[in-house]
Length: 326
Image 1 (cartoon, helix red, strand yellow):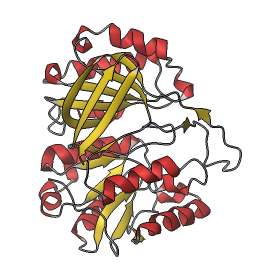
Image 2 (tube, one colour; image 1 turned 90 degrees about the horizontal axis):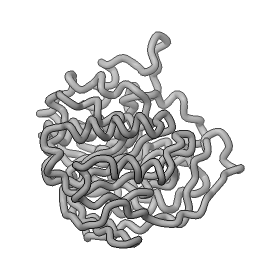
Image 3 (tube, rainbow, N blue to C red; image 1 turned 30 degrees about the vertical axis):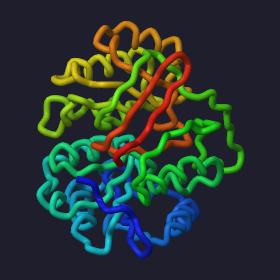
Image 4 (cartoon, rainbow, N blue to C red; image 1 turned 30 degrees about the horizontal axis):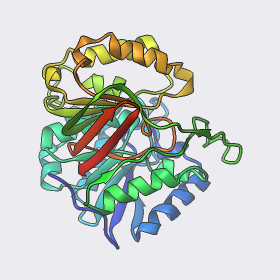
């Protein structure tokens, strides 16, 4: 079940399922709203988007769930955009009314900690959700063009398209210093295993996705192409074991392919590490594996659907990713 695309006059509701809007600087909020309004839409904040309880990292479960439910039931709202990530979106899963969401399908977009929400909602309702930029992402002044173009493509168009690599990448704390940015040349996709595949798209932040293992909220892995990334808190050893844990899940033997997002510099996961990790797992030997894709915690990033469909090819040093249903 695909949600409606954005059109002129629609409303985007900003909610905070993890960290609060309170941590986002006012000038960055204004810039994000200005950018989103270029789509001809209105932007609103949920009732408790900016609330932050003194005794917790995030606001209460009740308030966060109430904002999620209100956004899905509000007839004016077409897209629900998360403020930012965090650590505790999985607290919400047993309190969400999935029938309500199924009856009011809308776009839900975010990444990082939001991975648990996007994948759980897809599993419980069949509604295609999206791994893509947060509201706060659009407060970035420089290096946002690639992110913006792919966001616009996914939410306003329907024709299949190839995800070309960004010509640069960055891993600086742009939200602390918008002017002194460091951009690096992007050399493109890296082929680790050759092959081609067509499948449903699932994934997001690996360590967050793995929080769903053994629960009713874990999506079915058969016939999927997994898009996986991790943040600065990982390292080669933890990425290895987190990937192995996912490989041990029922249905992984029917996964069709793997696309890995670019690692943050602080993770110290090099291409040599990644080659070694992938080649050490016989479960991956017969599926295409593409690395250094432009999504995840480095910038810029493309948006991809949780529950959509993609086709990938990887031969020699050439790779392609085509979104066919999104």
